[in-house]
Length: 283
Image 1: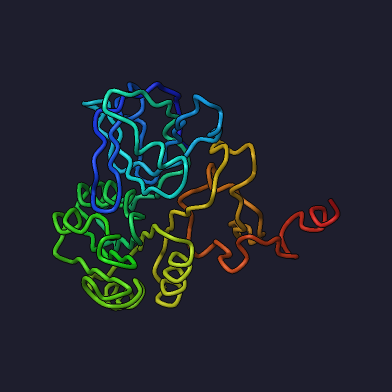
Image 2: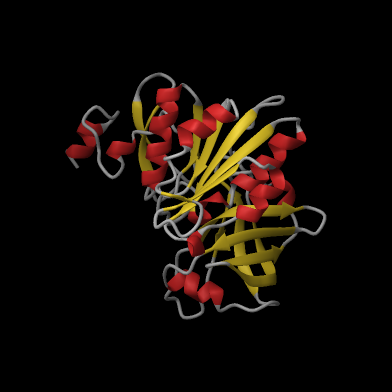
Protein backbone atom coordinates (compact mmCIF):
# COMPACT_ATOMS: atom_id res chain seq x y z
CA UNK A 1 0.00 0.00 0.00
CA UNK A 2 1.31 3.43 -0.94
CA UNK A 3 1.77 6.24 1.57
CA UNK A 4 0.63 9.30 -0.37
CA UNK A 5 1.31 12.95 0.33
CA UNK A 6 -0.32 16.07 -1.06
CA UNK A 7 1.93 18.70 -2.61
CA UNK A 8 1.83 21.84 -4.71
CA UNK A 9 4.01 20.65 -7.58
CA UNK A 10 5.78 22.89 -10.07
CA UNK A 11 5.66 21.96 -13.74
CA UNK A 12 9.25 21.72 -14.95
CA UNK A 13 8.50 20.18 -18.35
CA UNK A 14 5.42 19.73 -20.52
CA UNK A 15 6.21 18.42 -23.98
CA UNK A 16 4.68 16.28 -26.73
CA UNK A 17 5.70 12.63 -27.02
CA UNK A 18 4.08 11.23 -30.13
CA UNK A 19 0.31 11.55 -29.76
CA UNK A 20 0.65 12.11 -26.01
CA UNK A 21 1.98 14.64 -23.50
CA UNK A 22 4.89 14.20 -21.09
CA UNK A 23 4.48 16.12 -17.82
CA UNK A 24 7.30 16.42 -15.28
CA UNK A 25 6.48 17.78 -11.83
CA UNK A 26 8.84 18.80 -9.04
CA UNK A 27 7.60 18.25 -5.50
CA UNK A 28 9.46 17.16 -2.38
CA UNK A 29 8.62 13.89 -0.69
CA UNK A 30 6.92 12.04 -3.54
CA UNK A 31 9.52 10.47 -5.84
CA UNK A 32 11.20 8.41 -3.12
CA UNK A 33 7.86 6.78 -2.27
CA UNK A 34 6.97 5.70 -5.81
CA UNK A 35 7.04 2.07 -6.94
CA UNK A 36 6.19 0.77 -10.43
CA UNK A 37 2.41 0.73 -10.81
CA UNK A 38 1.65 3.61 -8.45
CA UNK A 39 -0.38 6.52 -9.76
CA UNK A 40 -0.78 10.23 -9.07
CA UNK A 41 -4.03 12.21 -8.83
CA UNK A 42 -3.83 15.76 -10.19
CA UNK A 43 -6.23 18.62 -9.61
CA UNK A 44 -6.73 20.36 -12.93
CA UNK A 45 -7.94 23.91 -13.62
CA UNK A 46 -10.35 24.21 -10.72
CA UNK A 47 -10.46 28.01 -10.59
CA UNK A 48 -14.04 28.19 -11.87
CA UNK A 49 -15.18 25.10 -9.99
CA UNK A 50 -16.09 23.24 -13.18
CA UNK A 51 -13.48 20.46 -12.80
CA UNK A 52 -13.93 19.22 -9.26
CA UNK A 53 -12.50 15.73 -9.63
CA UNK A 54 -8.81 14.91 -9.74
CA UNK A 55 -7.45 13.07 -12.77
CA UNK A 56 -5.44 9.87 -12.12
CA UNK A 57 -2.28 9.10 -14.12
CA UNK A 58 0.21 6.25 -13.77
CA UNK A 59 3.67 7.45 -12.78
CA UNK A 60 6.12 6.87 -15.61
CA UNK A 61 9.33 7.87 -13.87
CA UNK A 62 10.32 9.09 -10.43
CA UNK A 63 13.67 10.74 -9.67
CA UNK A 64 14.33 11.22 -5.93
CA UNK A 65 17.57 13.11 -6.64
CA UNK A 66 15.66 15.75 -8.62
CA UNK A 67 12.45 15.41 -6.57
CA UNK A 68 10.50 14.91 -9.80
CA UNK A 69 7.76 12.60 -10.99
CA UNK A 70 6.72 12.15 -14.60
CA UNK A 71 3.36 11.22 -16.06
CA UNK A 72 2.20 10.72 -19.63
CA UNK A 73 -1.33 11.50 -20.73
CA UNK A 74 -3.58 11.74 -23.76
CA UNK A 75 -6.07 14.52 -24.37
CA UNK A 76 -9.31 12.65 -23.80
CA UNK A 77 -11.65 15.14 -22.13
CA UNK A 78 -11.96 18.54 -20.47
CA UNK A 79 -9.54 17.72 -17.68
CA UNK A 80 -6.70 16.47 -19.82
CA UNK A 81 -7.23 19.26 -22.35
CA UNK A 82 -6.93 21.77 -19.51
CA UNK A 83 -3.78 20.04 -18.26
CA UNK A 84 -2.25 20.20 -21.74
CA UNK A 85 -2.72 23.99 -21.70
CA UNK A 86 -0.59 24.44 -18.57
CA UNK A 87 2.87 26.01 -18.83
CA UNK A 88 6.29 25.42 -17.30
CA UNK A 89 6.34 27.17 -13.93
CA UNK A 90 2.64 26.62 -13.26
CA UNK A 91 1.68 24.80 -10.08
CA UNK A 92 -0.50 21.70 -9.94
CA UNK A 93 -1.95 20.19 -6.77
CA UNK A 94 -0.97 16.51 -6.69
CA UNK A 95 -1.59 13.55 -4.37
CA UNK A 96 0.87 10.69 -4.84
CA UNK A 97 1.83 7.92 -4.82
CA UNK A 98 -1.50 6.10 -4.77
CA UNK A 99 -2.60 2.49 -5.15
CA UNK A 100 -0.86 -0.86 -4.92
CA UNK A 101 2.23 -1.35 -7.07
CA UNK A 102 3.19 -4.33 -9.19
CA UNK A 103 4.68 -7.28 -7.27
CA UNK A 104 8.32 -7.64 -8.28
CA UNK A 105 9.90 -11.11 -8.55
CA UNK A 106 12.47 -11.95 -5.91
CA UNK A 107 15.75 -12.64 -7.63
CA UNK A 108 16.41 -12.94 -11.38
CA UNK A 109 13.35 -13.69 -13.51
CA UNK A 110 12.27 -13.46 -17.13
CA UNK A 111 9.28 -11.14 -17.52
CA UNK A 112 7.21 -10.06 -20.51
CA UNK A 113 5.77 -6.54 -20.57
CA UNK A 114 2.58 -6.11 -22.61
CA UNK A 115 1.23 -2.61 -23.22
CA UNK A 116 -1.59 -1.12 -25.25
CA UNK A 117 -1.18 2.50 -26.37
CA UNK A 118 0.33 4.62 -23.64
CA UNK A 119 -0.65 1.93 -21.14
CA UNK A 120 3.03 1.02 -21.05
CA UNK A 121 3.74 4.07 -18.87
CA UNK A 122 4.12 2.09 -15.58
CA UNK A 123 6.00 -0.82 -17.16
CA UNK A 124 9.34 0.84 -17.86
CA UNK A 125 10.17 1.50 -14.22
CA UNK A 126 9.20 -2.09 -13.51
CA UNK A 127 11.48 -3.35 -16.30
CA UNK A 128 14.31 -1.33 -14.79
CA UNK A 129 13.78 -2.89 -11.36
CA UNK A 130 13.72 -6.41 -12.78
CA UNK A 131 16.88 -5.94 -14.84
CA UNK A 132 18.69 -4.30 -11.91
CA UNK A 133 18.29 -7.49 -9.91
CA UNK A 134 19.64 -9.66 -12.70
CA UNK A 135 16.42 -10.51 -14.51
CA UNK A 136 15.51 -10.09 -18.17
CA UNK A 137 12.54 -8.56 -19.94
CA UNK A 138 10.76 -8.62 -23.26
CA UNK A 139 8.12 -6.23 -24.59
CA UNK A 140 5.03 -6.38 -26.75
CA UNK A 141 3.77 -2.88 -27.53
CA UNK A 142 0.57 -2.40 -29.44
CA UNK A 143 -1.85 0.28 -30.56
CA UNK A 144 -4.57 0.88 -33.11
CA UNK A 145 -2.23 2.93 -35.34
CA UNK A 146 1.46 3.81 -35.42
CA UNK A 147 0.94 7.29 -33.97
CA UNK A 148 -0.74 5.81 -30.87
CA UNK A 149 2.27 3.68 -29.92
CA UNK A 150 4.30 4.64 -26.87
CA UNK A 151 7.78 3.70 -25.68
CA UNK A 152 9.10 1.65 -28.58
CA UNK A 153 12.61 3.11 -28.41
CA UNK A 154 12.59 2.97 -24.60
CA UNK A 155 11.80 -0.73 -24.79
CA UNK A 156 14.59 -1.34 -27.30
CA UNK A 157 17.02 0.32 -24.91
CA UNK A 158 16.25 -2.48 -22.43
CA UNK A 159 16.22 -5.48 -24.73
CA UNK A 160 16.25 -6.66 -28.35
CA UNK A 161 13.17 -8.74 -27.52
CA UNK A 162 10.61 -6.13 -28.59
CA UNK A 163 7.56 -6.86 -30.71
CA UNK A 164 5.29 -4.09 -32.00
CA UNK A 165 1.75 -4.54 -33.30
CA UNK A 166 -0.75 -2.14 -34.84
CA UNK A 167 -4.30 -3.04 -35.71
CA UNK A 168 -4.10 -1.28 -39.09
CA UNK A 169 -0.62 -2.60 -39.93
CA UNK A 170 0.93 0.88 -40.09
CA UNK A 171 3.86 -0.29 -37.93
CA UNK A 172 5.15 -3.71 -36.98
CA UNK A 173 2.90 -6.77 -37.00
CA UNK A 174 -0.63 -6.24 -38.27
CA UNK A 175 -3.21 -7.34 -35.70
CA UNK A 176 -4.06 -7.17 -32.04
CA UNK A 177 -1.50 -7.31 -29.29
CA UNK A 178 -2.36 -10.88 -28.30
CA UNK A 179 -1.43 -12.24 -31.75
CA UNK A 180 2.27 -12.85 -30.90
CA UNK A 181 1.74 -13.24 -27.14
CA UNK A 182 2.03 -17.01 -26.78
CA UNK A 183 5.07 -17.18 -29.04
CA UNK A 184 6.75 -14.32 -27.18
CA UNK A 185 6.19 -15.88 -23.77
CA UNK A 186 7.70 -19.15 -24.93
CA UNK A 187 10.61 -17.47 -26.72
CA UNK A 188 11.90 -15.72 -23.60
CA UNK A 189 10.65 -18.42 -21.19
CA UNK A 190 8.66 -15.81 -19.31
CA UNK A 191 7.84 -16.64 -15.71
CA UNK A 192 5.50 -13.69 -15.40
CA UNK A 193 3.60 -11.28 -17.65
CA UNK A 194 2.83 -7.70 -16.71
CA UNK A 195 0.11 -5.96 -18.71
CA UNK A 196 -1.21 -2.41 -18.81
CA UNK A 197 -3.77 -0.92 -21.15
CA UNK A 198 -7.47 -1.06 -22.03
CA UNK A 199 -9.69 -3.51 -20.16
CA UNK A 200 -10.44 -5.64 -23.22
CA UNK A 201 -6.74 -6.10 -23.86
CA UNK A 202 -6.06 -7.00 -20.24
CA UNK A 203 -8.77 -9.64 -20.30
CA UNK A 204 -7.37 -11.18 -23.48
CA UNK A 205 -3.83 -11.23 -22.08
CA UNK A 206 -5.00 -12.81 -18.82
CA UNK A 207 -6.85 -15.54 -20.74
CA UNK A 208 -3.77 -16.42 -22.81
CA UNK A 209 -1.58 -16.49 -19.69
CA UNK A 210 -4.06 -18.79 -17.95
CA UNK A 211 -3.92 -21.23 -20.86
CA UNK A 212 -0.11 -21.15 -20.82
CA UNK A 213 0.18 -21.45 -17.04
CA UNK A 214 2.07 -18.16 -16.69
CA UNK A 215 1.47 -15.66 -13.86
CA UNK A 216 -0.14 -12.44 -15.04
CA UNK A 217 -0.43 -9.10 -13.28
CA UNK A 218 -2.55 -6.33 -14.75
CA UNK A 219 -2.76 -2.57 -14.17
CA UNK A 220 -6.46 -1.81 -14.54
CA UNK A 221 -7.83 1.48 -15.86
CA UNK A 222 -11.15 1.86 -14.04
CA UNK A 223 -12.77 5.29 -13.96
CA UNK A 224 -12.05 6.93 -10.61
CA UNK A 225 -13.56 9.86 -8.75
CA UNK A 226 -11.78 10.18 -5.41
CA UNK A 227 -8.74 7.93 -5.95
CA UNK A 228 -8.49 7.12 -2.23
CA UNK A 229 -11.12 4.42 -1.73
CA UNK A 230 -14.03 6.50 -0.45
CA UNK A 231 -16.46 6.89 -3.36
CA UNK A 232 -16.60 3.23 -4.56
CA UNK A 233 -16.83 4.35 -8.20
CA UNK A 234 -13.92 2.18 -9.42
CA UNK A 235 -14.98 -1.22 -8.11
CA UNK A 236 -14.61 -4.45 -10.03
CA UNK A 237 -15.24 -8.12 -9.10
CA UNK A 238 -12.20 -10.07 -7.96
CA UNK A 239 -11.86 -13.58 -6.55
CA UNK A 240 -10.07 -13.48 -3.20
CA UNK A 241 -7.47 -15.95 -1.99
CA UNK A 242 -10.27 -17.62 -0.01
CA UNK A 243 -12.18 -18.26 -3.25
CA UNK A 244 -14.89 -15.70 -2.44
CA UNK A 245 -15.71 -13.03 -5.04
CA UNK A 246 -15.94 -9.45 -3.83
CA UNK A 247 -16.06 -5.98 -5.31
CA UNK A 248 -12.66 -4.39 -4.75
CA UNK A 249 -11.64 -0.77 -5.25
CA UNK A 250 -9.12 -0.47 -8.04
CA UNK A 251 -7.68 2.73 -6.54
CA UNK A 252 -6.58 1.20 -3.22
CA UNK A 253 -6.82 -2.58 -3.71
CA UNK A 254 -5.36 -2.15 -7.22
CA UNK A 255 -4.67 -0.82 -9.72
CA UNK A 256 -2.19 -3.69 -10.04
CA UNK A 257 -4.08 -6.96 -9.66
CA UNK A 258 -3.51 -10.65 -10.33
CA UNK A 259 -5.08 -11.04 -13.76
CA UNK A 260 -6.24 -14.59 -13.02
CA UNK A 261 -8.42 -13.34 -10.16
CA UNK A 262 -10.23 -10.51 -11.94
CA UNK A 263 -13.66 -11.53 -13.23
CA UNK A 264 -13.25 -9.64 -16.47
CA UNK A 265 -16.56 -10.72 -17.99
CA UNK A 266 -18.46 -9.36 -14.96
CA UNK A 267 -16.92 -5.88 -14.78
CA UNK A 268 -19.75 -3.37 -14.60
CA UNK A 269 -22.18 -5.89 -13.14
CA UNK A 270 -23.00 -7.41 -9.74
CA UNK A 271 -22.68 -11.18 -10.18
CA UNK A 272 -25.27 -13.11 -8.11
CA UNK A 273 -22.56 -15.15 -6.36
CA UNK A 274 -20.72 -12.00 -5.24
CA UNK A 275 -20.38 -11.61 -1.49
CA UNK A 276 -23.15 -9.22 -0.42
CA UNK A 277 -24.93 -9.36 -3.79
CA UNK A 278 -28.32 -10.12 -2.21
CA UNK A 279 -28.08 -7.06 0.02
CA UNK A 280 -27.08 -4.89 -2.93
CA UNK A 281 -30.05 -6.11 -4.93
CA UNK A 282 -32.39 -5.13 -2.15
CA UNK A 283 -31.21 -1.52 -1.98
